[in-house]
Image (cartoon, rainbow, N blue to C red):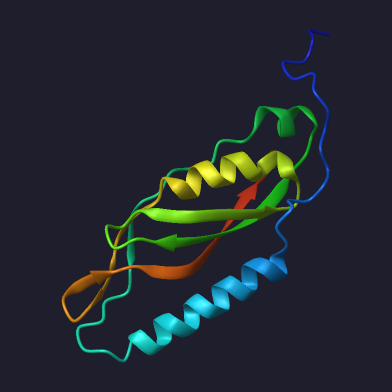
Length: 130
């Protein structure tokens, strides 16, 4: 058989960031958004650009599938910031961070002003065959 493109180690350890850490951040952000939603002129942030994850070559060579929960904030100009993934394997961390860092939003609006919005979360699935 031809040699594998990837010859490095298969990494099965989870990301260093735990789900508990992400959930605490998400709950704080959700509570803040809920309070702001009562303000006049409130408009929730709307995603306008989202890239599709590319399955990491190393994970594919290892036959590894996984999930990532990714926490992030949205700036007043609609860019994602403070992107932090928590994945079932660290082999997915970099791609999860890349994808979510590329998200673009119409920012949250309060009384006609764009404002930052903290503590968002999304889930990315990495499956070999779907």
